[in-house]
Each structure stands twice: as C-alpha cells, then as structure tokens.
Length: 289
Ligand SMILES: C[S@@+](CC[C@H](N)C(=O)[O-])C[C@H]1O[C@@H](n2cnc3c(N)ncnc32)[C@H](O)[C@@H]1O
Image 1 (tube, rainbow, N blue to C red):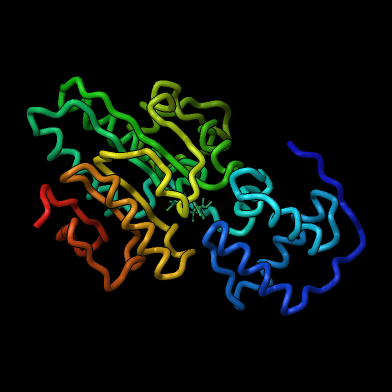
Image 2 (spheres, rainbow, N blue to C red):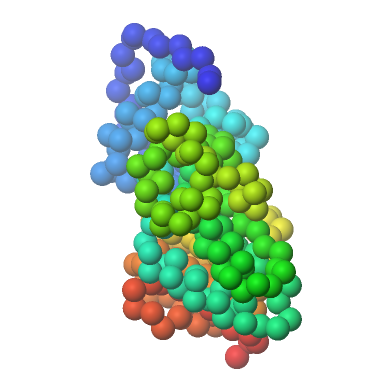
C-alpha cells in the first residue's frame, strides 16, 4: 500500500478557469466528462488524492498529469479510479447474462466450434468477468465438448485490476451467485471472505485498457463483448466511437451486450439488434448486407 502523507493546510479553492482546464484535461486523456453537477465530487476526490501524495497545489498536480500521457503516468489510473464510481456486483443485470447464456448455447451447438472468447470491457473489480467465466464454464462442461475458452477483462484503473486479479470478495457479495456456483467456483478463506478458485481465475486475463485507445488494441474475433455501466461516462460521439471499435472486434455472429439505455437512437450496418426487450444487445451479421 502506498504511503499516505496527510497535510493539514486546507487547499485553496479552485477557480472557474482552473476547473475548465481540469475538465478538458480529464476528458482528453480518459474521456470522462466532469459536468458542473459533479464539480464538488470531483474537487473532493482530487483534494483527497493530492493530500495522499503530499501536494497542496492544484497547479502542481495538473502540470504533473499534463506532462505525461495517461499510459506512462501511473498516477492517471489512480485518479481515474477515484473519479469513477466502481460499483459492480456478480450477475449484475441478470437478463443480460441470460442473453449471453442463450448465445453460448447456440454457439455450442455448432459442430465446427473450437474456442470461445469473451471480453468484459470496464470490468472494475472483476465480478462481471468472473460471472461470465462461471456461466461459460458451466455451459461448456454441460455440452460435454472439448472447447478452449477464456475471458479477457479490461479496465483503465490499475487498483481495480489488482483487486480483480486476486479474486477475493466479501461473503455478502458472493451470495449473489447461485449456491451451486459458490460451491464449484469459490474457496472459503474465512467467515467474511471467499476467493475465486484458481482454475477459474486462470481462465481470465486482466489487462489495463483505456477505451479511448481501442484502435491500438489487438483483440479480435470475440464471441461475446460485454460492456455495461461504462459508456455512461462519455459524451455521445465518444460512445459511438467506442461501440464502433467494439463491433470491429466481434467475430461474425458475435454478441455485443451494452447496458440498457446506454446507447439510444443508434444503428450500425454490421450488427442487428437482438430481439429481447429487457436487454440492449446486438449480433454481428455474418456478412455485410
Ligand atoms: C461503474 S463501473 C462498471 C463495472 C461493470 N462493468 C458493471 O457493470 O458492473 C465503470 C468502470 O469503467 C472504468 N472506466 C472508466 N473510464 C474508463 C476508460 N476510459 N477506459 C476503460 N475503463 C474505464 C472504471 O474504472 C470502472 O471500473
């Protein structure tokens, strides 16, 4: 854990001009929009972080972040961690997971199938990715077929990824999983914590990816891309760019699951909407229309 240097001097207030500069910098590097309504949350989070690293001048912190790209300055991922709400849970939004189940069942009926690749984009502390892994493992085992499969899980926040890789969760959180999954996939550590069993953890690859940099990401031929509660942070044109990049990484027939209401009034020639009113999902067409 990093050493905390608490300073007692109060931070001076941030001027409107400074706030505009900060907003622009954060949006340019990580895409997150800090609107006026979130200004006080932003200032509190920024102030707490600055105290932790022994800074009391907004300008000094700004200069440090501005002088380096987000990828080369680890401080960026800590700051993003503080500026985003990393709320997540196992099997969050069950209808979306049911849609993945249906899709995988169909895939597993295809005779030539060799492998299944899934991607949890904006995985936070890993609950979403492990839920996808448990669901896939169960279906592959039930099919009786020898299929190689894996889940890539990405987030911009390094602290969140570190927690995700450990796969240690509170017992109350783990109770969201069906009892049979708790038994099959979780080791009890003590009364309050459990850890995802190693063979399942080994199926996951956690990587740091900023969704603004998807063009440079070599992932492709994904059978399922699951991206929920991430697009909410971005402006409309960025959401569209991100989703277009994700579509390019789907295998023909692959499934893209977004959060309900996260992408309205939008269509793309390469995908068709999955007929399911409770979810926002698209299937990549097998060939261009
Ligand atoms: C609310 S959590 C969603 C977690 C999970 N997908 C779910 O629905 O439960 C949003 C996540 O998006 C991540 N995030 C925010 N900006 C990002 C960016 N530019 N690139 C990648 N991930 C980002 C945050 O770090 C956070 O973990």
